Length: 218
Image (cartoon, rainbow, N blue to C red; front, side, top):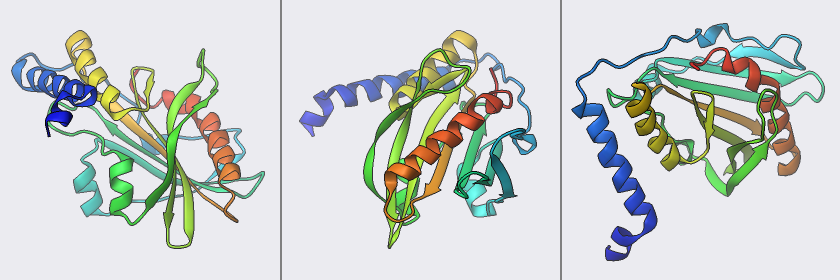
């Protein structure tokens, strides 16, 4: 326990949590809650990724997520036939205790066990430099999937849960807003070829990144 209390990570997290508590519960001013376009209207015109179907979440899952808007949709690549699931959970404010649930915590609860984890850099249209996102390979029985996810707010892309919390506090102080979104992509792995699945996931992200920005607050 003493080692944990003196570690850099624990000190950083403690500072963030204390600041977050002060911002969310100590300030009496009304928060600036920006408008956003409904995610159900999201489209990918001219893309090789074709919408197959929306995948509604059950009430129990919605009650746990507590997001203000959700997109859960299955896509198929017309070039390769690859299937991809796109999930976006948007939160207008986090001052009421509603925050994104980290996939690295949720996936094991669904029976998916991470076998590889790290981050990757993706060059996307509209950004001056590559974005950094989380990269996971998860397994359940004989099935494998590649998972990419990140936190997105104010045109900022953050992979780390800790830094996402930090920026929530900073934005609440500076801009009087705490809106954010969790964006996640899942692609099944075929023939144990995780590299190919990762490449497809990257291509998918590159196709929707710029159009999605128009549906999130800037």
